[in-house]
Length: 128
Image (cartoon, rainbow, N blue to C red; front, side, top):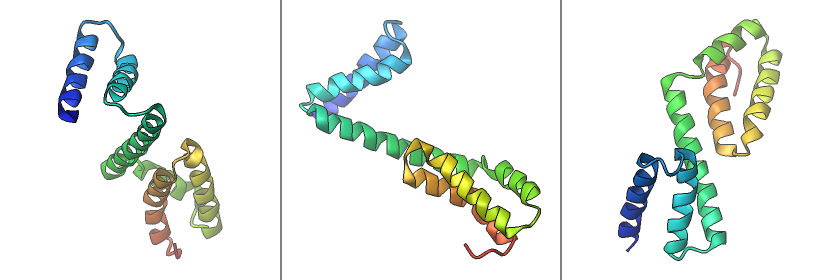
């Protein structure tokens, strides 16, 4: 039953977008909610599932960005700014972690901060 609902959701989603009845962003929000309710998932469980999906997306997205080398320029910029001073590196790490944690997800904060700063710590021989 869930498989049928899943395929139906994709078909309805694609139709609504291709027929230009809904904008893609609106369809991405409304269609899964409607099909979740049709599947018998309560509103409280649906909200929990949506938050878990966002966390999973963030982990996968930032994992891909780390693999693509998105944060390498950040490391180079920080290297130029700190000029080899370990105290500045540690303060920069704290500031980066504070900035990244504004999204509220601890796992992505950890991933981004470690990915950006660990090479710097290794290059300056600072114990992480």
